[in-house]
Length: 237
Image (cartoon, rainbow, N blue to C red; front, side, top):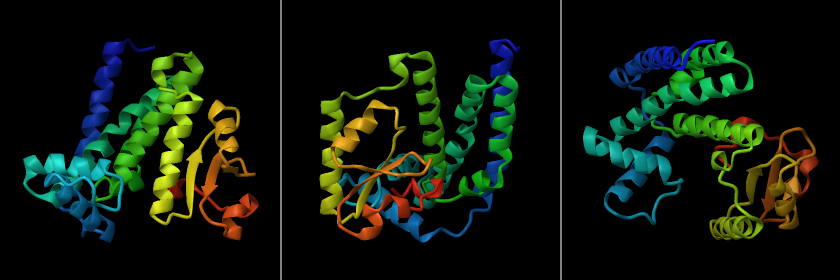
């Protein structure tokens, strides 16, 4: 077992390697996607002080608006945000692998995330994928630590009243926007599962721990046995 100082040094080397692989995506950027144009438009609204507009969640456009203060270019700012989070994903991946297995698995997982083609490609786009992957891995790490170590600070859990109020507000907003459903990923053994079931959420019959709240009476939405959901859909939902 390595001491903590050697672990940190090795992680810094992997981070540097991940950054070098992704820096070429800044030097030779790809053609911006349609979604990227919308993120930039939203970022410009945020830069002007208007937080009410935009059709996307504000986190990624906010980061673009912040980095743009340095780059003076919105498209390049969006790519830099993706490169940074695409590089930083190495950290939660390592610590998750080490927590579940050991340091060897943690380092191998971090190296795999460093060179994985899909993760590299998404790190050079004005898209939310890199940011989403980073926060997804980080949330899984925090959740694992919370359930395995039982430490409250690893998971800021809401009580039933707070969760219900938050989810109800989300449902109201989705109805105002004309959204057909609201989706959540919740283990069946978790307290939230029972609370959400009482609120009217439907649960998938498959192993995928997915629940939806229907805002319409479409047969496909009301029939969980007909659902087809994969991890790629979760950033949309």
